[in-house]
Image 1: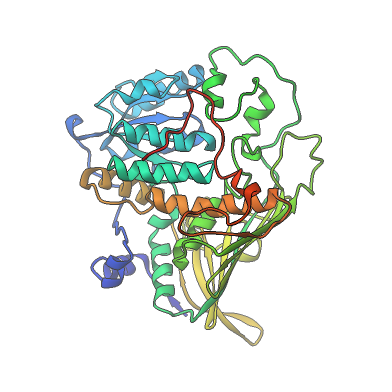
Image 2: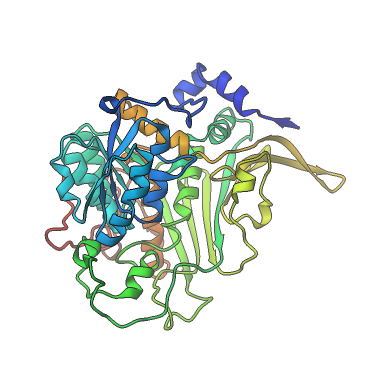
Length: 463
């Protein structure tokens, strides 16, 4: 068995033709950026001050502030009380300098001192925050999934290009050395011909609440801004707590958690557009009348590429499926693959590669010996958030393209939208035009290609 060492891989790949051709960002220690004088710091604005937004800012192992060369000038959140509560933790990490708290991100756009926004909003705000920031001359780190509709993604790509901006989508698995090594392994043909890939997202139920009546929003909470580009609706606490599972705001767990695995699989295999997409499933595990939820808790999708089938399987029930925990991803361990919630299985003619996202590592299995598994090659992983942030910050300085630009994030998110279109149409098989990204000869599917906006929360068409 061959275990590929992270340090050896980095040293060998840094100047190799394969590494350069694949666009690798080689980082020896992304978490040890130098302290920077105030005039040389990258000035950021947090758009969205929830859990993920603050993790990106203040996490003591991989947040932007721990680097020493970034500073937050704004905290933007529709909930002024939550935004205000984030001031002290950020100020404490940047020498007492307090960020300004605003509810409307448009107040940030005219401030020329801001270099970039960090968009960690609900999904339906990703495209609008990105396009507005690009138009204002600011770079963008935007969380996954990249957008809420196919058309929105096209405008993000156009804005990135037209305004010459750095846009990094939060698919951080692309910045992980162990995933770079897996991609190189596949490109070198060491798994043989690849004709099947299975992507899994299997978790206990989460993020749903019981049906609740409409009400007035809490004091200090601007519901109109939070609802933003979504259709008009009175404030409802159920919508606020369950937005991941509502079509108006997101696309279910295939869009939320599984987007990481879908992007990683597409990147590892070098894929762009599927020829056809089919998806089916439903809400089988819980009574849909009791919970504020529309998206499936059980879903299957099948993507047909040239001589390659890619399947996706989702279950949101059963506490026996486990996400890769911090002990596994921060040490030399592998997940228990059979019960790993977020694994990818790549079947080649010469072996089976199982890949874990977010530090899970990978192993290549060949024919068992004496009924025991045989691992031919493997590499341990580490959580790649620091490397992804380093890539973004360095691209702001150099104007190079980041590891997951708007186009790459868009292509992966398209796979999610196509599957959900098929699911919502009762399992219709969709044919995709790679030139326009449209669904061919299917007006019902194309009705979901672009949503209708309400002023002033309108994603601009970039021409």
